[in-house]
Amino acid sequence: MMKIFPTRISDPVANLAKQLHPKHWRELGRFFRNHKWERDDDGDLLISHARIHGEYETVAPDGLGTVVTPNLLTTEGCNHILSATIAGGTQYTTWYIAPFSGTDTPLDTWTASSFATAATELSTTYSEATRVAFNESAPSSKSTNNTANPAVFTAATDSVTIWGVGLLSHSTKRSTSGVLLSAAKYGSARTLPTSGDTLGVKYTLTLANS
Image (tube, rainbow, N blue to C red; front, top):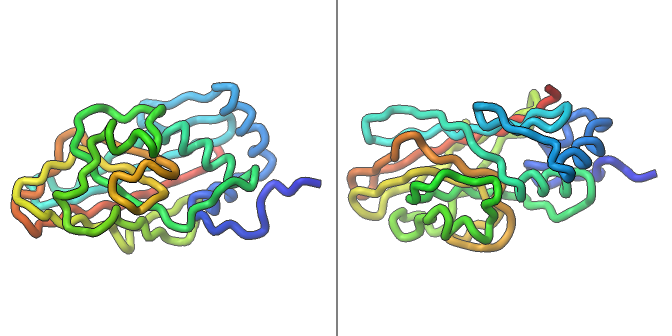
């Protein structure tokens, strides 16, 4: 008999996904493949019995304080969740947050291969050598987050403008490999006025039976 889940899942996203009731997963895969899913006004993805929700919380010295922005989970990201959880597909032990300066609204057709160009991913204007790791907590109550260890981006120049972020499986800045799980565009740009200023990013991903 085929196992619904592998005995050991190293991918934190897939590990979170397996907390949904196993009897729903085959059905979820079928509904998603047949495009029988929808989004609500908050950007949550609704597939049959499951609700998938993610949001980014950012803070910067730009006078806007702490801002919470719902994400968009891409088709590529949802396919990854289903593949890594059900079909024994590729798993990634670490995910990475990448900032972008483009003003286009993220689309569910965005992928890791198109993200750098479509979003105008930043690379030289922050001093970290790579995209910054998403150091997540152990999944609990069907949710995982990096609240205890936010991703931090340090301005390498004055007047850095950031319009949003994405969560990707590869660390190299502007890489076109791997998976783009989610992306979010802020309602207003976050700015880092002076070199050395920082943007802190927390991300929470929740998968639950609706």
